[in-house]
Image (cartoon, rainbow, N blue to C red; front, side):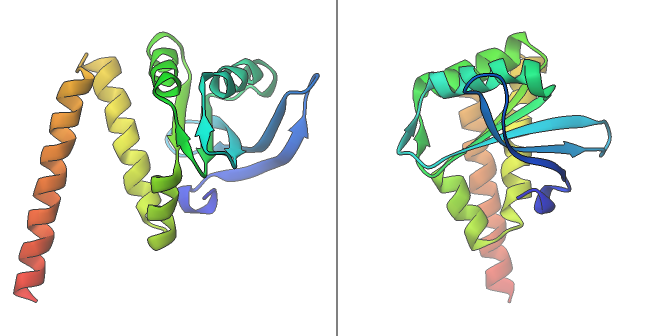
Length: 157
């Protein structure tokens, strides 16, 4: 995933103070410099406590972006926490779960679309004050339009 997103690997798993652990540190120099902290979880559910711990570790790692990847799913509370943190702080959180990983496995270039979609959602919430319901409607319309375009391309082939 690091290579697909043009990130530069900086460090593997490290144990900082106490039991705090980060799986990967990476950095980006595209457009602006940013440091990424990546935590991987092989669990069915990831709750708010995992995200809160990762935000706490940013004071040690200096990360601007916290990405948590799970083979399972994030709870509703975890999503609410992530959006609240992005709303009131400088941090950007990327939550990738099972369906995202499956999409990336099918086609590695899907990672760009997934990251773009998540970034547009955060931008709309932070900068345009768009509600979750409005965002869901917009995303559903975008999905329908994309399907219609794909169908039209298939019909012309």
